[in-house]
Amino acid sequence: MPPAPVDRRAFLKTSAVGLPLILPGLAWARRSRANEQIRVGVIGMGIRARNVMNGYLLGHERIRILAVCDVDRTRREHFQAVVNEKAGNRDCAAYQDYQDLLARDDLDAVVITTPDHWHATMAIHAAQAGKDIYCEKPLTHTLEEGKRIIAAVRRHDRVFQTGSQQRSEYGHRFVDAVEAIRNGRIGKLLTAHVGVAGPPRPCDLPGEELEPGLDWDRWLGPAPARPYHSDLSPRGVIGHYPSWRAWWEYSGGYQADMGAHHFDIAQWALDADRSGPVEIHPPRDGDPERGVTMVYSNGARVIHGGPGGITFVGTEGTIQVDRGRLSSVPESVLAEPLPDDALRLPRHDTHINDWIRCIDSRAEPICDVEVGARTAAVCQLVNLCYRSGRRLNWDPADWRFVDDAEADGWLDYGRRAGFELPL
Image: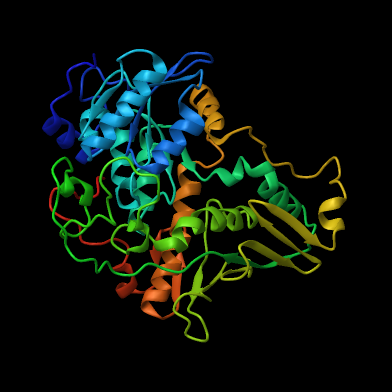
């Protein structure tokens, strides 16, 4: 049986100011050693959790799932039973409130697979609770969240992996592409065309009758209050991705959904993991869904639109890469081996194994919190440019717009009382 949870009000009060070593019994400084089991809680039991659990967690020799959490009773009880059946015991507990899960002193790490508008709040609270973290992409929903989540993870010395698996998996096609670009195989990089879907729109779904078993208020969390609709949180165990990704209040749209993967690779190729664009320009033709252009300090441009995946154009060639393909013009760009002294990028077997190795060593994973936050910021800047229809000047070092008070008002949104973004 799980230990009695720490008083939730005390936990909330502590985490709101980010003070460590207040709650007795929390595993603030545990360091995993190779071959020890890592005791994990999973927050958010939708289809992404199912894929992560089946693909990475269940049956992994290093991972022991001790807790699951979801605001839908059917989902959390289903996955509790799945975990217990797989482990052959009854050790996995189920929670409605993620704070109760985080208050356990026998968890080393958490996996966060909730809707996007909850990622940053939960991840910051997890860092304050002394847990290492694996959080799905896009890592944040607003620019202010990016700055705060980086600060919290650094302050509490957590190992954080963003779920952007293209840096680790898919036959290392993306690694090969970025390695070739960073070694000058296509000359100076001029443009990267990112072919993903368009921005989100305000949620206009009608209200539906709420069935028992779902804590709708907690599902909404910091988002504006509105009546329940099944497109946002389909009841029970589901086999599809719900449409909350389409709506501004909960996500960055399908632009951010795949953009969090493909803009990430563009940033990697530009060696901009700790930076970002400095100018964001609206489409010249006024297209509301394609054509936003971002300019980086070295003059390179990243453009929203084009064939699926990423098309890199340099002064001496091009590279196209997606999950199922990798090609170049001329072919020699990729066909000829790199010299022995070339820059080499890491190649991991799986994204979750990279996280586990870093929990052991306390090193930064391939998609550390700042990598994930800055990629999410690119998606947010694209969306804000479409929404405002005007040029934006961005200071990636300060996480603010340049001499633009109106745009600075878009760094975050008004959150409901009781769901404020933690410090």
